[in-house]
Amino acid sequence: MQLALDLKAEIRELKRARNAVILAHNYQTGDIQDVADYVGDSLGLAYQAKATDADVIVFCGVHFMAETAKIVNPAKIVVLPDKDAGCSLEQSCPADQLAAFLETNREKNYYVIAYINCSGGVKALCDVICTSGNAVKIVNLAPADRPILFVPDANLGAWVMEQTGRKMDLWQGACYVHVEFTRDSINRIKTEYPDALVVAHPECTQAVRLLADEVCSTEKMVTYCKNAPVKDIIVVTESGMLHRLKRECPDKNLIPGPTDRCACADCRYMKMNTMEKLRNCLRDLAPRVEMDEETRQRAELPLLRMLEQSK
Ligand code: 13P
Ligand code: SF4
Picture 1 (cartoon, rainbow, N blue to C red):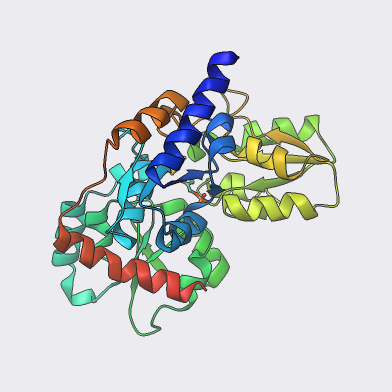
Picture 2: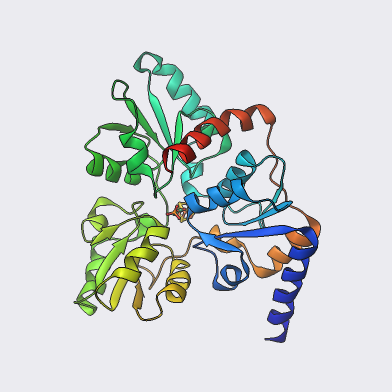
């Protein structure tokens, strides 16, 4: 206990000495969320990263999120606790494969929309970026006279098609965490809590989304749970979300959505970050996010377009 307190105090002191800001995603462990300056979804974190006047951005999330911070605020030092914190969606769409696909389909003149869960190299090939929080809006603003290619999440893409009525060609990537929820696993927990509402992330499969009362980004889950007219809410997303929700909605009974194997779902990449690694990256200013300037500049344009369009 004393050790944990010391670590927290050490992190706060290093943060002050470095003039750093700690940004944490909703899926981080509770202790990291509690020491962060801002906890939110990918969209909120991108706005925070762009607006900060701190010298150092410590990004507690996965690599593509820290890279996004560097793209929109290149003058800052951006560090992350574990540089190997990846994402299965990012891995499903390597930049060279997307470039080859676009070259082969050049005559289609695709308007390319990339979910933010992708590498800087993929962002550099796109027209606009979206997050789960603004995907419907971004797709509604796409030019009507061009076909859309949506990368890399096929489940999010399918949900956006349902919401907008706009047909899109979908890259076949998936979040390995959210596809673990099944119709059976969610139906089982619904039987246990018959009065509960169900909120699910759009990275879930359609079979699971159909069982949800609301499908939304992690940040919108906070508003949904706060305003829900019932006590029991089944939360179908990564387990870290429960910490944020319990803090914001203390009067609710928040139940993690189970998979067929586990009582809740953890993202192994998000959970690579620890308080020790957070302390170390503040102390050593490493590992840092670096990227070549040409790719960064090309990736910045679609990101800025997104920030503008989702205001
Ligand atoms: P949000 O933008 O909704 O926080 O989602 C990010 C993510 O990685 C979901 O798996
Ligand atoms: Fe990527 Fe899924 Fe982990 Fe989110 S939960 S970071 S989409 S692997």
